[in-house]
Length: 116
View 1: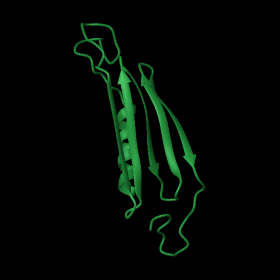
View 2 (view 1 turned 90 degrees about the vertical axis):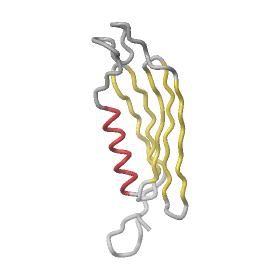
View 3 (view 1 turned 120 degrees about the vertical axis):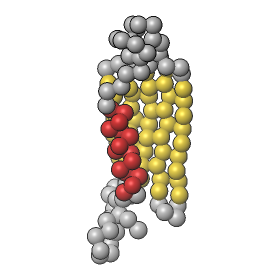
View 4 (view 1 turned 90 degrees about the horizontal axis):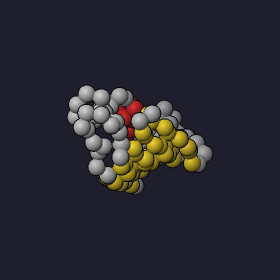
C-alpha cells in the first residue's frame, strides 16, 4: 500500500510539473503558435480492487483541445478513501481533494497503523 501511495504522489508531481507538447517554439500544450496543434481527444479508466491485499485505487481521465479533467482515488491505510477530482488547462493543475469515511487504525501493536 505504501508503494501505491508513493506511485500516486510521483504521478501527481509529474503531472503538476511544466509540460510542453508543442512541436516548435511557442506553440506548447494548448498553444496557438508555430504550426502546433492541440493533442487529439482521449479518454481512459483503470481500477485495482484486490480484496486479499486490500489494494483499492484507480484513475480516469478525458482530455480534448489541450484541457483535461479526471479523478483518481486510493484507499488509505487508515481505511478512508481519498479522491482527487481535477482539471488541467493552460493555467495549471486544479485539484479538489476529498476524503470519505472516518480514520480507523488497527488495535494491535507493532506500529502497523491501518495495514493488515
